[in-house]
Length: 323
Image (tube, rainbow, N blue to C red):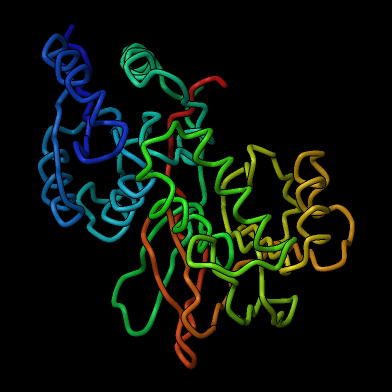
């Protein structure tokens, strides 16, 4: 009996792949049932998926950071390459950020994760299949939405960009880089310091959440996700009132500390906290002057009079490894 085909889509320029891709290629050379396609730019993913669709894979594995996953999900949603039945998607732990891989239980060595996925594909996948809601982001007159699973905005996006542009180039381990970023953020907030060497102060923005009205202010954190884990790997239980989870924390040290404690304690959204806004909705509009938003690695910027809207997209099947 022939083994099922498995497609592996790799981005060699993903940070994690710089060290791991040679091992990935060696593994694929020893497993002819793995159809390995490499891309170097996001605009090549459409052609990659058109080619992958021809081999009718039982599983599509994405080897790259969250930005690569986001680009692939957008193409799956908009491109129609698999007609109405795209294969379940698995994600290898890779890149600098791994929120999507973490949500799907993939962590540690990407080769070990790949081995486990290949083994799972030899039998019934249904016990490992999970449905995940997706976010559809629209801006201006874009004909097609951008698809993702986690959006960070306001001070959170500014801090992510600060870490990416100022701290990561130092070549330090991820844990130390993130710790330095947190120290720089707290120095700006608590000591009221302003410097080009510190994260910038968030700009004013306005959030319009269906059923919850409008919230305006400067936010240290804006997070919108369909993932079970909001931030810091803390799981947020859904109330069933909407498919998008929205967290907005005002630019106050006390509010940020309360939100941090509630997230660690698994109590986020269960009780009201001053300056901490949590909602579940099926539509959110974001408007502001030059406010950064990052959807799974892709950056957008708001403009006055040109709101960015987020709505749920068609759910997609994913392969979840045991945590």
